Every structure is written in C-alpha cells, then in structure tokens.
Image (cartoon, rainbow, N blue to C red; front, side, top):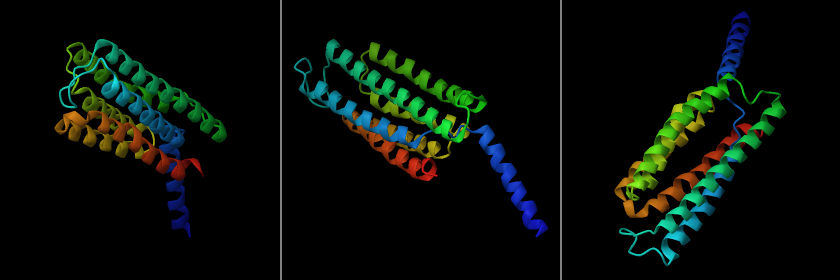
Length: 207
C-alpha cells in the first residue's frame, strides 16, 4: 500500500511539473476551424490561379500577373489572421474554464519557439516571391510551418509534434510534384488541421 501511494504521489508530481512547463490550453477546435479557413482559402486561390484571365499557361508553367499575386497574398493573409484570432479566442475560453493563465512562461516559450522558424520561412518565401520563384512557395510554407510546430511542441500538447512532422513530409513530397502545390497546401493546412484538431478536441477539450 505504501509503495502504491508513493508511486501515485510521484505520478501526480510529474503531471504537475508537466502542466507547469507546457501550454495545455491550446484548443483542438481552433485547429479544425483553421483547417476549414484553409480549404476555403485554397478554393479562392484555385479560382484566382486557374480562372483569372490575367494568368496564362498550364499548371506546371503558369505565368501569374502581379494583380493575381496580390490577390493570393490577401487570401493567405486573411486565412492566417482568422486562424490566429480563432486560436487566441478559443484558447482564452478554454483557459478560463480551467482557471489557467493564457499568457505565462510556457505560452511565451511556445510563441517564441513557434515564431522563429515561421518568421524565417516567411521572410525567405517573400524573397522567393520577389525573385518570381513561385513554384517553391507552397512546399516551403508547409516545411517551415512543420518545423515551427515540431520546435514548439515541447511547450504544448504532444500531438502538435506529429502535425508538424506530417506537414514536413507533405512539403518535401510537394517538391517532387511542383505543379500540384495548391493541392498539397489544401491537404496540409486544410485536411491535416481538421484531422489533428479533431483528435485533440476529443482527446483534451471534452474532458
């Protein structure tokens, strides 16, 4: 009996230490909604690329006008902003239910470790767009986002690590199929977010 109580005490201490070092208020529902936003954005991007009269060429050798690039940038920025706002709102709501602080040491570490690879990739992709090397934009967004998730996963729910690894795999695979970047973008940011977000929701949020 004493050994069993001792082991239970150790388990509780480990859980407390784990919760204090990880941001556990991340909402799985925010991942689902981010995936939906991404699929809607991918549809508008598809319409812009393949049905805009200012773009010419086939799917492997597209010539995209400056106006079409601006539209694509607006679509991507809108998806990103909506996803961030949704994530913040739902995480705050989840934290309020458990009486946890949203902005603490763990969340700061999460943001920093997530932001460094993401910002690096963002600037690199902007340089590629300025050089009109557009074929690598979709693969690199997946790869750098995946790296950001893996890098930040040690400060939040472990499922984020597997989401990141999946994104990296899809990004690398997308470099082999350059003409299908938008499809991989929708699969990664859309379908994968919905799947992993659903798993996280049923695993953590419904408790």
